[in-house]
Amino acid sequence: MEVFHGPSTYEREPSRHPALKINSKEPFNAEPPVDELVRSYVTSVDMFYKRNHGPVPVLEDISLYRLEVGGLASNRCSLSMDAIKQLPKHTVVATIQCAGNRRTAMSMTRKVKGVGWGLAALGNGIWSGARLSDVLEIVGIPKYSRVSAYGGKHVEFVSVDKCKEENGGPYKGSIPLFQATNPEADVILAYEMNGEELSRDHGFPLRVVVPGVLGARSVKWLRNINIIAEECQGFFMQKDYKMFPPSVDWDNVNWGSRRPLMDFPVQCAICSPEDGSYLDGKGKVTVKGYALSGGGRGIERVDVSADGGKTWTEAKLAQGPKSGLGYIPDDDDHRDKWAWVLWEASIEVHLPADIVAKAVDTSANVQAEHVETIWNLRGVLNNSWHRIHINGTSKQLHSNL
Ligand SMILES: Nc1nc2c(c(=O)[nH]1)N[C@H]1C(S)=C(S)[C@@H](COP(=O)(O)O)O[C@H]1N2
Ligand SMILES: [Mo]
Image (cartoon, rainbow, N blue to C red; front, side):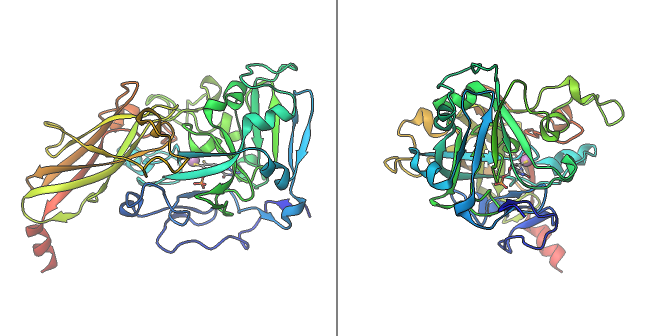
C-alpha cells in the first residue's frame, strides 16, 4: 500500500463539527450555518465548508511524503515536506468558493444536477506555504513564463483520492502556466490554514490554493504537478465545471464546446437575518452578508433594498483584521484582492418585506437580476441578486398558537 493513498471506503474519515449542515454524507459535503459564516472575517477550520469527491486520503508517514514535479520542463524533482517548508513561506488571505455555491436556489426555478448547496459553500482562510512559482523555478521554469522551453503551457495538479467521476482515479485540474509562474497571482502550495497545520478535510499535507478561481482548481491532497502542453483532460476540467446557456439541457449538451470555468464572478449574499425569519413590528433592521469577486477584483459597493429592489441603500463594508499583521495587504486596493468583504446595512423595513442585495466589483461588473437568466444545467455560478423574505411577528404569534 502506498504511504499516501485514497481509500475506497469511508471508514477513515476525519471527525467534523456537529453544527455543519450535511448536503451529502459519502463523499462528505457540508456547509456551516449562514449566521456563523459572517460572525468572523476569517472562517475557522471547523466551520469552513468541506467539498470532497471521494473518501479523504490517508498519509501513513509524513517523512515518506513526496511531491513529484515534472513534465515538459528541463528538470524534474521530488520534494519532501521538509524541502517544501525550506522554500520562502508565503501567506495569502483568500476566499475559496465552490462553483456550486447557491445551487439549491437555482434548482428551484428549474432542476439542475449536482450537490445542493445553500449560501455557505465558501470560506475565507489564511493560507501559508510555498509559492508555486518558486517550485516551478526548481524544475527550470522562470517566473512569468507563458510557454516552457519544452512547450508546456499548463500546470496540472493531481491528487490521490478515488473519485467515481474519474472511474476511481484521482481528482485533478490545471491552470495556465502564466498564472502558475506569476508571483502576483499568489498561487501557493499550502501546508497551513489559519496558522495551523492543514487538516485532513482541507488537503493534508499539501494543497494548491488558486486565489480568485473557483474552488474546483484548488486541488487538495496534492501528489503530482505536471507541466503539460494542453489543459488537463480530467473529468472536472472537461465534463464538469463548465457553464452552458439556459437553452442547453442534458439531451443536447456538448461539453467540448465550452472552456473550463476559472475566475468566479461578482457575488454577494445576505446571511442575517435568514430567509423566512420573523422580526418584530417595524423599524430598523441590520442586514449582514458577504461579497466577493474573482480574478483579483475587489468589491466596490454593495446595495441593499428593503422593498424588493425599488429603492436601495449602500451597505457599509467592514474592514478585515487591521493591517500590520503581515498577511493583510496594507492598502485598501489590495485588501479584497483575493478575500471577501463582510458588509452590513441598517435599513428601515415595513414587514413583511423582501430584502435584496447586489454587489458591484472593482471592474464595475454587476450581478444578474434574475436567476432564470443565468440558469445552467449543472447549476454553477449562481450569482443572481440575493433575495430573502422576512415576516412580521404577528404571524409568528399566530403560528405559535
Ligand atoms: N483532491 C481533491 N481536491 C479538491 C476536491 C476534491 O474532491 N478532491 N474538491 C474541489 C472542490 S470542487 C472544491 S469547491 C474545493 C473545496 O475545498 P475545501 O473542502 O477545502 O473547502 O476543493 C477542490 N479540491
Ligand atoms: Mo466545488
